[in-house]
Image (cartoon, protein in one colour):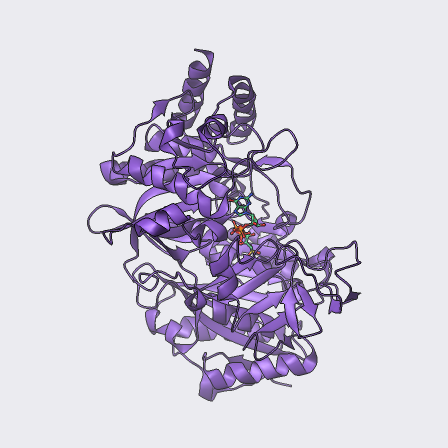
Length: 599
Ligand code: GTP
Ligand code: SPV
Ligand code: MN
């Protein structure tokens, strides 16, 4: 039987799109093809369908209007880095940090898996724009999927629907082709595969977040990082926030932390009382991904390519992240959290101290939060919330030109070693600092949690090409930007005491550190030169209203030279992977660090 394509509602005349869709329809053989125009009628019908089949559950319409709950399969709860591939034509172009397979071989292996995979199902054709429609920094993607969950999430996370094709026109071939099928959610045959030279992503046998919302990590980081290298811009795993001073001037900062290390929290922070009283405000532009390009004035400008937040639920509460919690109060999709049956709402560890007794856990089992010794929500359970819900969303969120960046911050989870904050000596040293980032692993990817691994620029799982070339691209961007380049810093909110407690209060109080960073950018704060970079004088971090005093700050800023000598050894080992594609500048930086540590 020939697939019914509803030709009347096709949303574009672009031949490249139409031919590719036809080809994929012929391969996957869905019963029908539905083009997603983004209209309320269409989305409401899809929601109703997902609710009727049990794929999604509608939540309390009064307390959580428009909100839905979804549970994934137990084996499908996070990104799977071991099954994620960069299939560049040459192996060396994927580099030592990516899984690689010859693209011809990979297509040959996956094609039979897609053959007929959508029989009995509907294929949804999702046109979407990463970035504000009409922005010169935006790019178009089309995702084909057999999952309504994906359609509804893409509606929140991207600018989805007919309008996305406006940027493409009738002849352009510049769109990313994403093919997703949940197939049987078989973990043994799960593949998340990128063909950077073909602008193509194939994902199969998963129904979870970063594996299947192909606009996000797959396109906006892996494919986009490759495009950015070729086209002179950058795609980074960075939040973007603005700090408005009492005079109404806003300065913008980006920050790259690995997955589940605090980007969403920092992006939406509530200023401590001392700054609030003085009239400071914080505005969120993005919480996960930044696309950055030099603007007409030579400064670096950033847009958030996304349109929503796919945030970690556990630990989100009115105190830790009020703005994120507010963002989830309507039109939000919850994945793998607890369902409180008393009032049909949601719960997760760290929301409050009152877990529901009459509930369903993330596995779909009856769960009593007062008596159970098991967690109710998965540690990587998430909310998908529209950016427009966020009380502190920036007025520049939809600005097609983006926002000018004053400072770029790197950071991770380090129990010791890394101090609360330091500034790089210059851009080149800043690239060294970013390239040597390390962090304890989290539940955002499958595998062991809490193991320290190198995660350069928080991009280890997301760089779509050879990481040595990526470092070179950073160095080249610095040369292009010259003295207009943002200043580069490193932070660590996660230092612990001997009992393993976090020393720094974190969350909103991180603003105290950001204020020193901005003061440095404006030449208003002093610094102490250490072996690893410039540090604040302890008294330059404002601790007014905090329980900790300057001596604790001094402790948080201490640099243990023995630990750092060990660190340097680890960096040598890590750098050795890149062979002759490691830029000379970075090995020189490492040598210079070692000399300073020996002094
Ligand atoms: P992805 O969406 O996976 O990229 O994660 P993310 O970087 O946005 O991390 P997020 O802000 O969701 O934070 C993840 C976890 O870190 C949560 O459990 C937070 O409670 C915790 N966290 C965030 N900021 C801080 C902080 O300043 N201090 C401490 N101790 N924990 C924090
Ligand atoms: C991350 O892991 O960095 C995330 C979640 O933001 S996912 O979209 O699953 O990649
Ligand atoms: Mn992320």
